[in-house]
Image (cartoon, rainbow, N blue to C red):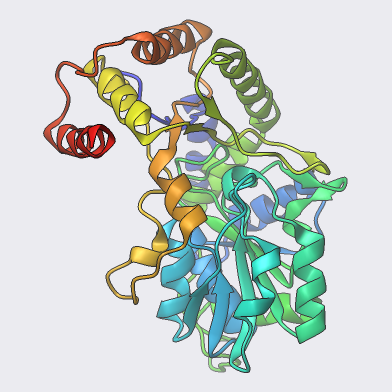
Length: 384
């Protein structure tokens, strides 16, 4: 079986050394020494001014919204993981969706201004697949209308924009260290800001608002992370450069093998040092994509329609049609990409995809029922 992703794990002996130290201290959580060491080493590796290690990427977004005291409407993207939108709703704000750029798949800055109202307090944009948004254009709009900017940079570990970490942009940037990410601490995330006062405020929020044992400074939540998770992060930090290099090699191999595929790829930002966090393929047709999914799954190769469906169709929000996002979300597919994937695996995957494209018969054996129904609907409308 080839899954869409697989977590990198260090040598168990390396993790065991940290476990032994945890057992010896019996300090398991609540801002322990490994959490502090992890934060310091992350700042050094990423070359960032300020960060806080938190329990996950969703909590990071919630802390960011709370720390900036946002209310009313927040302009955001419909093409992201659900946490981007659910965090806005959870914090009592209203997400206002703006369609995406057809080339980068990031929020389209050219459509942001028309969505701004007297109730707008911020822009929350996602750097999709680790590819930075048009940061300069977004900041220019935010400055013009006195809006805050949060970046959901969950995919961005190792990505640089204009020579520095993409986490350094916006009022607050957030990221995820979930096990599915190229760098992980099993569960985890972080918030970044260049403002010391914001950092201090978020540190209170992360720990119930505590300002000492019997004093509370802010309304807070439990956003802390444990020594066990920090230990995994410390182990994996030693390997991250080779992880990034391997993903780059695999991505270039994919592009070479699929050069004849009827598909395209996101346009990367010109000022980018990319981390190759995913391998998204935008098929020319949904029909071809569905056939490829079926053929791959028949050989136990599992991809992901990431992101599908669009967030503008969430059941707890008014349904909204955004044509560019709708089109891309119906044709996008992320192929397997992880550190232990081999070039032989990529040969196998790409051979199946190209065989489907070159196969004239429209039927695909062993198609899962849900896919078969969707494919039949497409073929029927095509024939009509």
